[in-house]
View 1 (cartoon, rainbow, N blue to C red):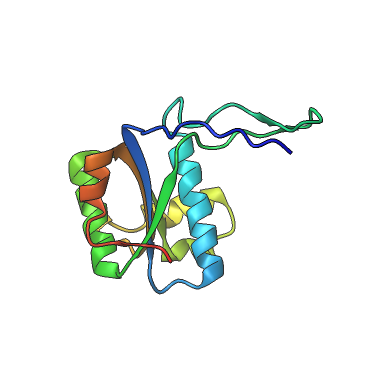
View 2: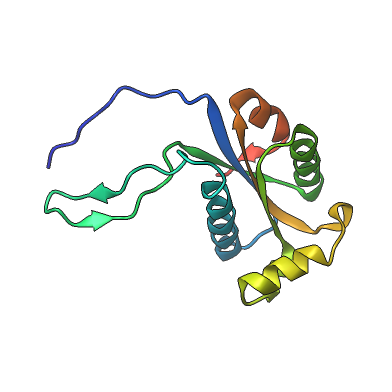
Length: 144
């Protein structure tokens, strides 16, 4: 098997996912997957080209740039949410209520039923210029 190593690419933008630090492992994975799906639909060019293995089998494309996953307590998560709103950054959210819903329409209804300041956030994902993302998620720590 041949591995092709390319020079490191530095992206002008960054994707950060911030998860509540009290989630169960299955919840962390579920929330991350949903949040990234929202970011992926936001802007052309975030998703790369399809993959193909050495035998010609094709696979779906994935995000083109790295994503960093952070954890934070409720206060830091709320602060990151507020900062992203102030900066007008593209953001996907996941609230605790969504663990009890069974489909997309119910998810949207659960979010719509709660005011911005009362959302029980368990995760957010943001995309934007590197410095703005760093400032937005300040106080969160890299997921271990």
